[in-house]
Amino acid sequence: MILVLDFGGQYNQLIARRVRENNVYCEVHTITDGKVSADKNIKSGLGTEINFSDIEKLKPEGIILTGGPQSVYKDDAFLPDKKIFDLNVPVLGICYGAQAMTHLLGGEVKPAETSEYGKTEIKISGDSKLFSGVSKETVAWMSHTDRIFKLPENFVATAESESCPVAAAENAEKNLYAVQFHPEVLHTVEGQKIFSNFVNICNCRRDWTADSFIEDTVKDLKNKIGAGKVLCALSGGVDSSVAAVLLSKAVGKNLTCVFVDHGLLRKNEAEEVEDVFKKFDLNFIRVDASENFLNALQGVTDPEKKRKIIGEKFIRVFEEVAGKIGAIDFLVQGTIYPDVIESGLGKSAVIKSHHNVGGLPEGINFREIVEPLRMLFKDEVREVGRKSGLPEKLVSRQPFPGPGLGIRIIGEITADKIKIVRDADAIYREEIDKAGIAGELGQYFAALTNMKSVGVMGDGRTYDYAIVLRAVLTSDFMTAESAPIDWKILNKVANRIVNEVKGVNRVLYDCTSKPPATIEFE
Ligand code: XMP
Picture (cartoon, helix red, strand yellow):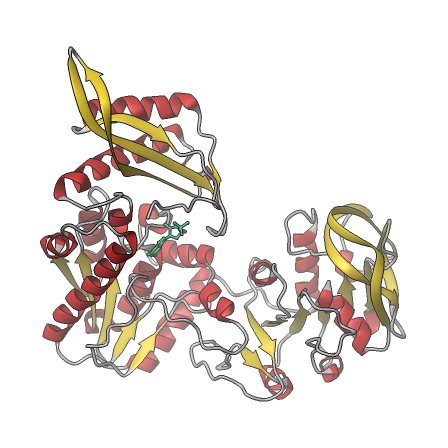
């Protein structure tokens, strides 16, 4: 395993992903001087914060020091214990990490005359193992305002850019490598090769795959749970589905999955989820609570109130069903690694509620939470899902919010409006699939505006709702751009919706980015 020490840079999760692309397990931790938060679910048994003696115990095959926003020469800078360079383990320092290595080993880091940001040409010299097979002139992503002015003893520079004489340096004998640029960012054209070289330098076995993850996890779950009873709230989303399948492999019928259908799912979704899970070895309970939800939402127009009601109700229905199952030992959560890392700096992870909307059910007694996906990134979760036998359609699903169509109907929710938005959305998704562009879009869906307008149909005047189509390009969902979908496709969708969905006479396309708009409408 490779240990990634996180100093707060914005690309740090990417570093872990690049390592894992080489089929090598890695964990991201931050350093601390004292207090360590235990986290039994992370393979090493350590929390997100660790100290030097934890690092020794971890026995990593390699260490990567990440980028970060600070300056290494300032008093309050986060710095690792200098002893990590004497562990006889290869270390790769990236950006701030490279400067931290330089500073701690007796070199000098100061503000650069010219800071570099963006794609930058670098020239590689010598025959560094880190750059084996990398072109001598290549493009790297830079983002720094400090730079290395003097190298520590026994270090040589191995790359330069126009304004940065030390774009990379190393002490090859001790396997200490420093790069000023960011090999983890895809704009660094040959970055993946650099990670692969580092993995070779560390002598890692490259045997961490989705299959080995499934095998190890199922074994661990069996040991941990024994004959205990496990409860899982299934939403039909990727994370809870993959978590449920892993548990089913480990404990079979001792797992009960409760699928609360709040009546705000997409067309045929509830049936599809049921069809998938009926095939696995587990107890599957589907609860049709749509009337219950609809009654609770009657007359409510405030978006936040709607969200709260749906979240609350979900928990209550789940608790009610769980109450009938009998004693429970473990509750499954679909927490994934970005949730763990983002909680950062030693705080325990924010527990993701099973529907992301209402928090943990208080009315259910259980001994412990199990989070089998706690160490996986989203694309790894999908791969584990595929290898576990879940259908591609479910595994590659776009995100769908916990409150479902409830936040895609502006204003009051009624049964009629749910039918309208559901049918329009199904047509939209069908046409996007047919056009073969689904993979290019971050998220796309139809929403129902609360606006009626005048139209003409045949010889008659209509006064009906307007549907709005949304499609965004995004990777992090924190920011997004409106997707420039081909007009012909949009036109076809609009035609079909006004012809096939009763109650709609107008279709709009949302061209707003986030910010200032959000992806969802409420
Ligand atoms: P916004 O609308 O805030 O959405 O731009 C960003 C992303 O989050 C999803 N979303 C939710 N997901 N529960 C969820 O599980 C929720 O309550 C929720 N609200 C928004 C949204 O679909 C988008 O992907």
